[in-house]
Image (tube, rainbow, N blue to C red; front, side, top):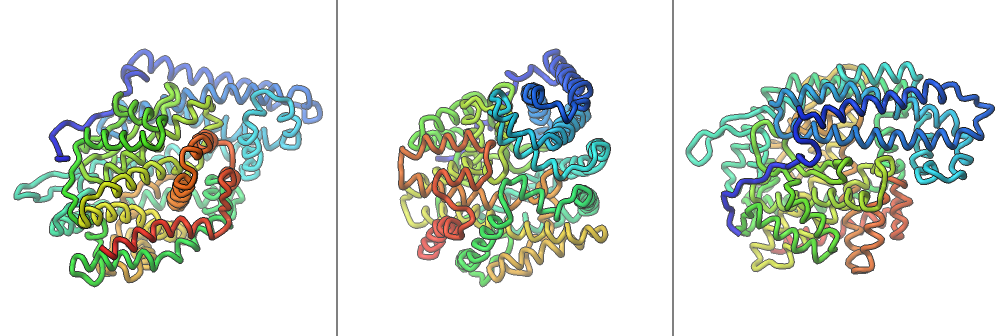
Length: 604
């Protein structure tokens, strides 16, 4: 499949709103504020004046009414936010989109005060009556898990006044720092000489040079990256200090044990599960280092320099046009499930995917649900590589996850999926395509190229993720005492990489600026955006092994699981497949699947 010059699509959201300045968008923006005013009235006139001694009869009806109102307003809010962000993520120069995002965030503060503060406090105050509420049937009973989780998390609320102030200050504090990081990294372009001419590359395209077939280009890209991030390290260090400092302060005031506490709760796992999984990953480091050393030998090196970490090996020779990637994904999705095929086909045919690399567009890839129309949108930066084919399959897995919840009629409050389980379908879909590619290899060199692409991803989601976890833990610990310099962040990053990669990488050529461009570090509301990826990889890999054993009988249970990931903790949902997440056996078996790929890689 040779690469063609067909244009890569931009996503289409015209069925959501005609334009950012359209009457329809303005009307819904105003309607959201009206809905929030109605909810505020319910709290002011009925919730806050509720007599604790006389809430038995009216409480169930009041809880039902609030849930119905929140589902309505949160669905509209999520739709507006997704629509605005579709412009911000693909064109950071769009001043109207940035202005509307700022206006939306003001409204979002009102919504957070109602949903995450006043509602949580109300459910916490009446938690002893919750069994009675759930027994009455109605909306509350269908949202039982959400209510029980809300009651538990209410223990970590500051006073209503303090929480309201924190929500308002977030706009000019942590959220502003996060937006600064996004703007700097999306607008950073550098001149690079490629193929005898100077090209101005946006940061996503520069990062993609890591997979270039020519080692000299990869090395040039690595050196240019370091120079580029060096030039913006100070504002990004200020951003990271501001965000981590805010999180530390709020965690202390809310009675959290540490920064990891809220992340574990958000992931719907416990520390025992996390510790068992991390121990299994740590025990697998020698296996991955064996892979890194074998790869280094292919380049005549004792240890792997960073610029070869993502390098292709073997000789696939295959470059994919966007249409070819689409056809390949659809063919193999159909072999797994008709529903998965149809979901992906809809995404391709209706331009739900923004694939083109361009200036002002965010790097990486993601999938976002658009609740108002029960659809999804996918962002990627397609360059014709096999890795990008895997990326599209991965993100379409997220879209299928959303599809299952939409088809099951789940409300937005029933669909609040933790990151640990959010990767379930994406890893499954990526594995389907990986196995499909491996199943049609024509030569050892082609098999090597495919295994390489897979192992690059696997090692990133285990070894590198572990380094990011170590980095973030130390940053939080040290930020509690003082601000950290850009050099401090870089030193912690390099040391974390040495701990996990060990002698698999050349310690002279690590990537000390990984902290600058990874957006995962720059969210005050989502700390430790790392270990859930490892959980997702190993959980999804384990489920694929179960699928291989059960075949088509696996699919109904799997689809039901995807539809239900917002309504249970990870351990209970995993138990449907007789998986014990607190047992090292499950994690080790999942890692053994990757281990077999490493063994084959070293044999070729």
